[in-house]
Image (cartoon, rainbow, N blue to C red; front, side):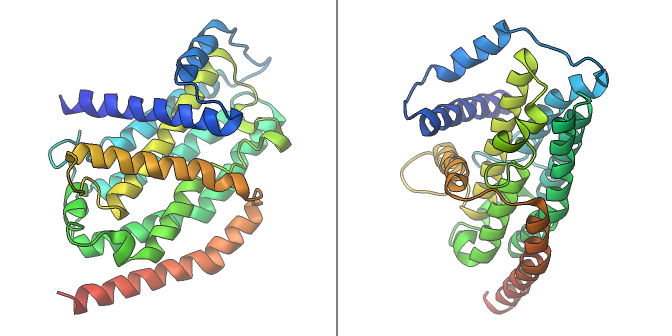
Length: 298
């Protein structure tokens, strides 16, 4: 039963995010637009490149969608509303989302096209940049909760959310999440004005529809992880717990869509340099500060 409820909540969140994305792009609020767009993709011809690696080409969109759903499976909407309350849930999220790279490399290699391949390898550069900025803030979150169980992590924030307890970790995790979801200004794998779509360039019809659905689902999953780790999860007054989880998740997801619209695209070399020379030292500082707080503050 939890699986069905979480899946419906995930699909509903993706639909709302697609509506908001359409509104920010066109200036028109059209609730039916995601459904119409999905039907349009179903009705269009799925063109296959002349010499593809067919296994990679067909598997990449589905794998990206599976990875996003797997990440959401360990993120609770309420104390008892979670698909899998694993003992290593926080690490499972990181392990599952590592396969985003695999999916994008496959999407870049499969069509046997120059733009797609460049987009896939660019994401490898982003992984080298942001990977530690995903793991290290999660480490600090687990230190405070003294557990990797996601429901316990949320429970530890009943008195004080982690965004207040460790704001530096929140900022680093949020930036890394945007890079993992390859949202602007970290949209190097697609780079519409530069690579003509990058990893999306050779996909059409149903395959493109699945790829876009997977990308929005990935944003929702990462927004939900941010809510669980830093925004107190289901904690909030008056409304039921699941409502607070959804409200916070959608707020984070929308902020991820809007934040990059006002920033220039960042080169992968610059992203790697900044993350390794600035981001990782700050993440270490965050772990030290949280460790001292855990020892000093009862």
